[in-house]
Each structure stands twice: as C-alpha cells, then as structure tokens.
Length: 247
Ligand SMILES: [Zn+2]
Image (cartoon, rainbow, N blue to C red; front, side, top):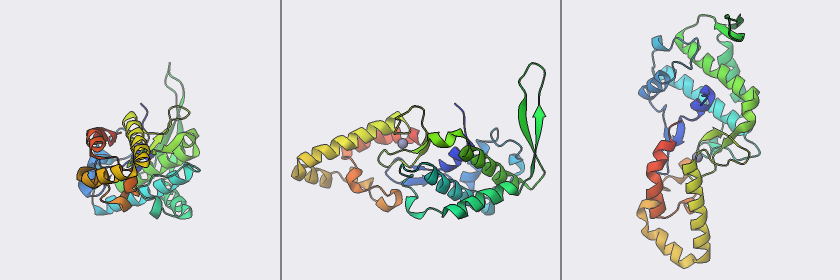
C-alpha cells in the first residue's frame, strides 16, 4: 500500500481507543519515533542527523496544523475530522506555513533514466540544516498531495470517536476501516433502539460507567455522549480501536 507523508502527518492525531484523542507528536520522543519509522519516505532528508528536540517538535506540529486545516478544506462539503474542527487554522495562514516551509529548501528537478527502466523525475534538494530539510520535505509532500488527484479521494472518517483522514478506496466508502464501520453501525443501532425505548435506554446508559468513560472528554473529540454505545459495544470495539490507530 502506497504511503503519503502528508496523510501520515495528519494521522499523528488519532483516536486513542478510549474515546479520547491521542497525539503521537505530544513529546520529543514521539517525534523521534515517528521520523525513525519514515526514514525511507523522507527522500533527501538527513533524518539520521536530525536532533529531535522541542524546536523540531514545535515546527512539525505547526506544519501539521496547516496540513489538517487544508485537509478540512479538501473534504468539503463533507465534515472535517472532529479532533480539531473547532480550532482550525485559517486557510490563508495554513497556506502560508506550507509554502514557507517548502520554500526554505530549493530543489532542482533532474531526469533519471537507467537502461531498461522508465524515465523518472527526481528532485535534488539543496543542502540545508536537517530540520529545515525535514519540514521542507513534509511541506513538498503536502503540496503534491493537495494539488494532485489524491485530494479528491480524501475523507474524514465519520465513525463515532474516529478522527482519521483517509483515502477513499471505492465510491461510497464512509469509514477508514472495517472496525470503524462496525462501530458506526453499532452506534446507529443503539440510537435507534434508544429512540424506540427512551426510558430503558436512559437507565442503561446511566449504569454503563465504562461506556460513559469514552465520553469523559467530549470536547476533545467533539463527539457527543449520545454517540457512545453502551458498555458491551464499547468493550468489544476497544481492542480493535488500537489497531485502527496504526496506519
Ligand atoms: Zn475511522
């Protein structure tokens, strides 16, 4: 499966499996691990000599905010990821950040055409410090992603508690993966059941302390408690939620 840096950068804000939102870049160690897993994708980046410090983390997180703001724009008229829908960067600021990061490292295109292989367009980045190289590579990927055909396949998953952006593989795909589809159907079934039997369902949700824990931080994920299915559904989906956290 093809991987895209911009999509993976946006995906560092993710469902934590317990109804909240986790941030893989919340500390320097998280940034270090994220980069280490993507050395092969970071073409032309001297990732090994990059010192992941607080300045680097702040720079990458600032770029991520720009990418997520533009992803929110790209999925219109569909809903954006609920994780940050209430505090998105203005589009002008997002564009300025992406373009400034990309411009900080001039690149020269060159033609690579080995015998027996098709010709390929490559980019030779000019030497810059490792952090500038990293943010420039992330920004270039965001430019290519958003200006290319992938943008039209970008969607925000609409399953309860999921905050992922994903690429639609087929026409009507609403959810980033099967486990999200299952959770959405369970939530829909629960809402229908509760609407049919309001008093019973109300007492049921009062007893399900485990299920309610998922909505303990509703503002974080901007998911209302009414989207949280009762404890039985919650516990069966919790383990699957962890695998949905990984790309
Ligand atoms: Zn999802």
